[in-house]
Image (cartoon, rainbow, N blue to C red):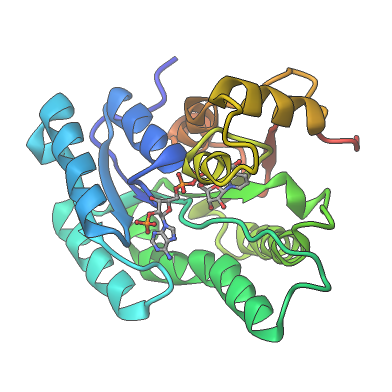
Length: 262
Ligand code: NDP
């Protein structure tokens, strides 16, 4: 199937690691040109150099950006306009917060709500003109299954993610028909977030394979393992591509079957 991505410019926030990096690679494989951003300049530059050497210097743009900072986003959007103008935006930057209601301070609530909402709002605002001008604009958000199936140990992340799904549904209406808006709901995907939790494990004698197998068992994942970033990336790529042209306002679950609802 031709996804229709040849020479299209796709923006991926949080493109220096995990799901975002896997998505940048998948998009490049499909013939797109990619513009990635993240806060950490050093890791971002290393990733840019790798991608450029594999796919071509003219196919990759990378800029250090905090998606929560309006000036950063404005400058990034200007650079992407020079690069050819975005036809799709993959809003993927972010991280989860582990805390129960009892542990979550007001400041932590504000920080989490700001991260989850504004990591969508700022990039979307900055890129709407380019997405509209492309004639085939698409926004895809990486969200979490926690939006629909909250966990008590991630109470503010779950709640903020539910609000984000609601926002995306509104945007799918407001931005149609020029821009489609879809999302993925991920369960547990093996990325830096989980690597950090593995490194902080209590029992340091436990191997990586055992720790991940225990985690999959504890979380009752029917497919018996965590997902690979590439498995999320393939769906993000499809939703960002003209191939999914009749989809908007949709949410696709990538969780190994871990949801308990129909
Ligand atoms: P990683 O930690 O591997 O990657 C996160 C990426 O986002 C990095 O490139 C990071 O770079 C960037 N980033 C984080 N905050 C910002 C910011 N404010 N501005 C710009 N870039 C930022 O995580 P994943 O690949 O796992 O996560 C991708 C998305 O999926 C996240 O939104 C995460 O919350 C979500 N998710 C992941 C799950 C999982 O199991 N992996 C589960 C549910 C949701 P830098 O730190 O340099 O800025």
